[in-house]
Image 1 (tube, one colour):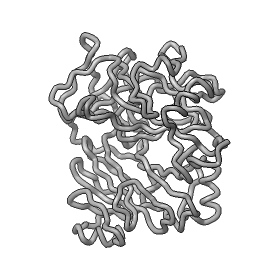
Image 2 (cartoon, helix red, strand yellow):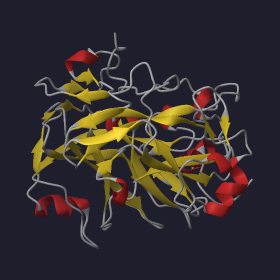
Image 3 (cartoon, helix red, strand yellow):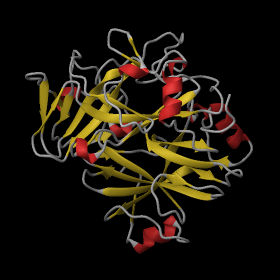
Image 4 (cartoon, one colour):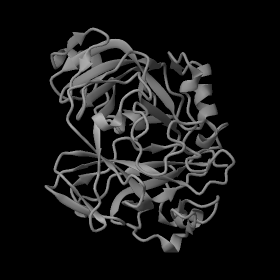
Length: 369
């Protein structure tokens, strides 16, 4: 196995056991390739997104932007911007180790923008080598007002000792090994030569799938806030409507929010992780994801024999009345090497989205009737 790349769950546990990461109270928050970060009861409302300046702490930046402290349990109103201090803290990263963060799937599927802030770091979602200090999360609900109690997780952090994202040559040499990376709905493997679209940059372009029983959902306006601690609680029809497919296409309204799916079934072998990446704006003014990390073992199944799973897409169009077709390119994924197989991969952990075969709403909703 490679000694460079993304750290799996057992290496993350070592960081915790050896005191590099403090405040982790539940080891269940360690995922195959990431650590779920939890909200504390320290909450602020701010007038907009911001970043700390170099040498400026987030606490100092909060004072600079006029942050107002809120009580726990406050409603985070859509269109607003809020900051939570996280329970977990970096005591100090080991030599050569750095981290990035991604919103969790459940955050993205509710159209919640979530970004990590760190002292003196003028980049979102970045924890550089040698960092020590607290972590904060900037939360901006876009479609629904939400209640975010302390102790829940909206963001996950990933640790690396080297960038091992595959370039085009390494993608080609690995694509048809390890059980395969990409499959059709009928279970047939897609070979490297059969990839229908490619930017030749090491990424894999995925297309829109509209041939599922439920092709997709559009969020609708509602005055009811969603309590993020409630699972399988809300009636989906109160917050979403089914998308209608006409002539093998759908029409997206500007700035509306949609839950769609990739046509391809994606498989991430346990010795790899995967991240979704933005499409080139020349493919259309559209954002296809907010959550973007795909754990080692996605689409592998508990027995290692599954033929992938489609990826849920969190889509917002910035073009008025954009028409997109079944099979049209809509997002990209980038594979990267994990330094060793995780002790448990995604398919072995009874995950919330382990059985999705088409667009899936967040875990907060009951099954669609």
